[in-house]
Image (cartoon, rainbow, N blue to C red; front, side, top):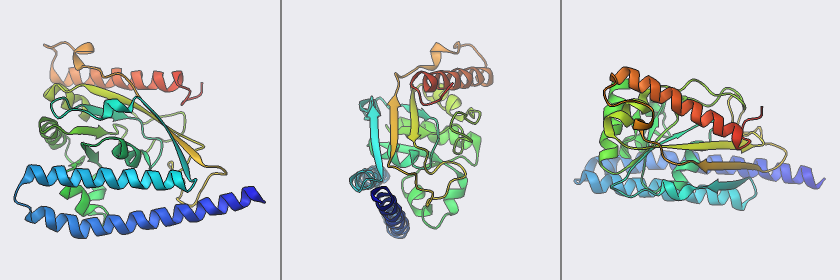
Length: 264
């Protein structure tokens, strides 16, 4: 009986959290975007909006933890609090819809690569524009825009699978945009391992598919890697990007098994 009450409480709490998230997302789009359009100083505008988004997601994670819906087990996250003159490209696997929320709550000065579909989403369109997030619609512009954000001191958060992982022990093949961005900007790559146990908000699951117990989000930030560890300076850009992408995908996959996030 207690277990059923706990389940129904988490179902209700999840529904309320998603409702608040949607209302706030719509409110941000209706308020932040007009303010951002009128704000005369671009640099201070982006910094303020980035801080608001970070604070909002920190609060949302705190609420989800406080009501018993989720747990958070994070290691090495100090590396996500990068200095302005030392930004990085965060590359993470993407098991669940909540990965973006968790990483933004842990990264104070972040810019994201987001799916082009979100630019027309009524709940997100204003937010992604006001924060100057980067669309994945145009691969060439993605690299250029990401390099510009890194030059401004923002850590780029990229899920190179492009969408949520197809299954718990599998990932989609990584796209090469992040590798081109790293080669162009010289920024280090910061691999991040994500896991959700038991699975929640994964591919094929609905928001109301609440697990039988509170799910635990696990985040492990690995040591940063430079592209020079994988590709030679005189290597053609296309070949270098392919080499870096393969190496980072293999590096993350191996550590997912080593940390027990993937099961052999």
